Image (cartoon, rainbow, N blue to C red; front, side):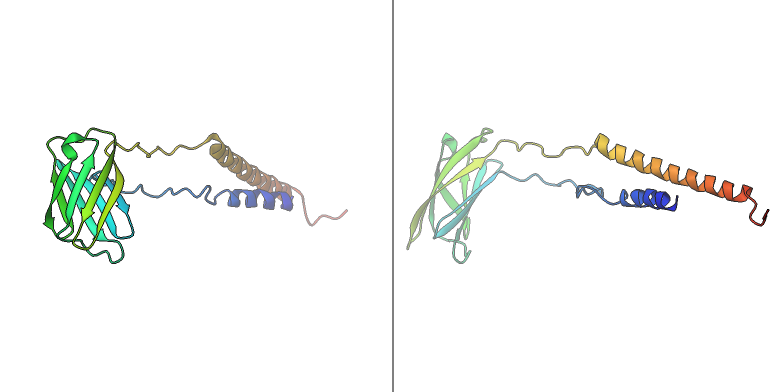
Length: 180
């Protein structure tokens, strides 16, 4: 009897542990800003990040080895979008801007960026994805197996409590001190 009760109580206790590594805490806060479409590429000499903001294509050019901004370079952009081609103008060291006449259509756009400095030249290819990313947020649902475990644990707990009550009743009804 005691072994059955101990097994039932242990089963209930072990079912209280977490499952599946899921986090049932508060959901993460929503992003306050949307992230602009961007693409990056690197070679042995240069690292380039292209960011699409409004009707501007910002091109950040750094030295790959030192991450130092590349100032005074000739940065030319070629794209499948006709209004996104041309020579980008430098706005600050390492930052170049190409003004666009129209918005990029939603798609994956190959870009070719050529960089010429006084001591080096390179050609980088990258893909700028302007399509909306698919939503990865899925609502949390509980599978039937989770509910079955909880119902089984509750049933075992109830059965254990019922067995305890029956045992106490039998002990109170049977006289202990009588000997015949």
